Structures are given as structure tokens and as C-alpha cells.
Image (cartoon, rainbow, N blue to C red; front, side):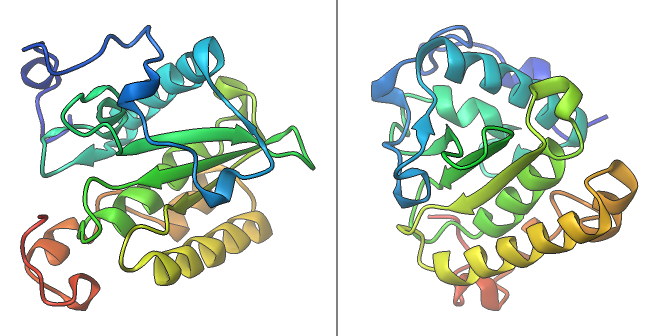
Length: 196
């Protein structure tokens, strides 16, 4: 069971769009990792994001600041420039690119959430139809270059060892590992203990 209650986080106070809707004003603009690729919108975005909701729930990819499944960030009207955008890779339609834009440029959870997302999505081609989901953080984050390098290394290790659960577990044992450390002000936050 996740440390956060799904029931408590699914109440609607008017701040969230519906899961079945694609609302362009509530999701970030596609960034450079998606340039030149087939960006998902409308029903295509909604379909993949629904699978994302399910696997993030199952695998515990939660935003500790807001206390909800990270997929819900795409629906949060209070943060219209944050969340995930997706694109089918122009060179390989079996690969999906996912770009995460955190709520702030100094979000201490960005690396942990992106790595947790990579772990959650991969090894599940039977669920979402992609052999590989590549993940990067939008360059608006102050540590984007370092996080991107870590994600590229993680991806290379995963491809070398196989994209099955056992291999992915050995690479990223806990999708939320590092969140508590980041909130305590480790060097990944440049001394910032607050997510804002």
C-alpha cells in the first residue's frame, strides 16, 4: 500500500481536470527532448496517461509535496506548466519519449520522480505498447543537465541488462528513494530544503 491515500487525493475541489480530458492549458508545452517527434495530444495523450496513472499507483510514483500520484500533476490547474508530455520517437515508433517539467526550477524531487517514472513505465510493453520509454527532465530545472546524464546512464544500463522487472529492480530499487534526502537538503538541492 502506498504511503499516500488515493481516496484522500482524488477528491475534486475544482482544481483538477478530468482524467478523460486532454486540456492543453493544464499541461506543459513540449520541450526540447520532444522536438522533431510525434507529440501525443488529445485521445492519444489521454490513453497513455491513463496507463501512467495505473502504473504509477501500482509502483508508488508519488509527488511527496502534493501527496498524490505524479500522473495527477498533469490535471492540476494550479500548475499548468508542470507534468509530463509524451512523443513517439521519430526514428523508432516502439520508443516513447517522456519529458517531465517540475513545478519549480528548484524542485528537489525532480531526479527521484524522473527515475521512478522510468522504472515504472519500462518492462510493461504489454500494457502501453512501447518497448522503451525514455525519460528526461525539462531544461528549466536547475539541475537538468546532471539529471539528464543520470537518466541516460540509467537507460543505457537498463537496455544492457534487459528491460524486465528483475533488471529494472536492480537499477532502481525504490522509485521514491532520495525524496526524503532531497527534502533534508542534500547536495542535489544546492542547499535548498524546501520544494519551493
